[in-house]
Image 1 (cartoon, rainbow, N blue to C red):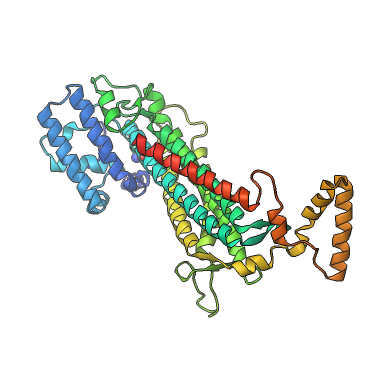
Image 2: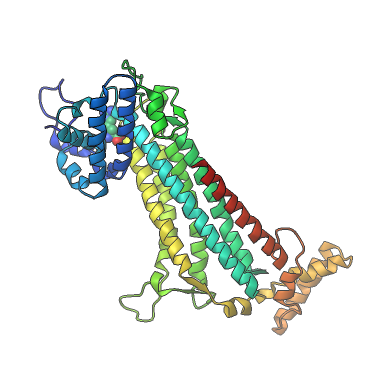
Length: 453
Ligand code: ARG
């Protein structure tokens, strides 16, 4: 049986090397389980429209379910690769025809790979977005747990701008700052999952809809889309929802990379604020003393590579006419590659983060370094009636004299931190409130998700 889904109008076979070049099988095997869902839904659409009877529908569902099992137990990949199919969709269709010689050839009625790819990619993107929303929430939660512990311990840190000592803060304050982007990321992923759930392309056929009375609502319902897509031409050609998910992944990687960068630097002996755990560190094949932060470095590396992959996916759409064009295969490859790699990077980042400990003494010892309390001293003058400009000049001169004498300023990092009074500041009370508020936000988000599903 040929695995190609076309050929009747040609007199000779396609060139093997060109067929190999055009194949997307290696890239879209990861979508196999989602094509199974799409295929089941298409059977519903065929049966719902009376295009196939219930016996045929049951036989097709059973064969598709068998393929689903073969995907799950790992058998299917080898079959697909040896099948000669152009893509995972063709391979699944071929396997269904093999398993079900009598009914299998009716599965593709009214269906094109164009609406099949669009639907399958949307389902994949939605599932990955949901995974990532959960991942972001779990990263945020673990950062907040650490924040509570460090707040309890009163650990202080010299926060920097331009990597120069700026002002003392609580380590808990930094940890909340690290958690916030992941809470926002979780929301971004949920919104992207929602956009991937909006409309079901299946039943759009090649681009114009079908002259077979497909029950599109039945397909949309089974796949948990809000409704069937409104315009077949748009539905087969858009990659908007998958791009939203890919974008959310890039953003989460960039957020992780900023924390990774700071930890890489804090793990150097010059800082010594953190200790990397054995499980997430690597050694050197030559230098016996080495403990390298490879996972955090890879977090940075993957983030910048993902920006490139995402830009590639987006750019492949530039100027593309509406409906399906084969360039979309490249768009899909880059979206899927990007998401898969980013998902692995976020998982590794979370694991390495859990394996990293703060060295409280080192953090505290440097909290007032570089005259970081100078701003509080200027604020104290302002509070007594001095103008901001004069206070700045007076304390600036004080810093100059202290620096010449090699002396610190007469204010502790602890007093600096405890003296903050504004909402959202690094004072212990404000940090406690911020932790509670963000924990609440994450919890209500979880509840919302639970009531929805
Ligand atoms: N493999 C293609 C993709 O992944 C689908 C092929 C659709 N081909 C076609 N001639 N309509 O996008």
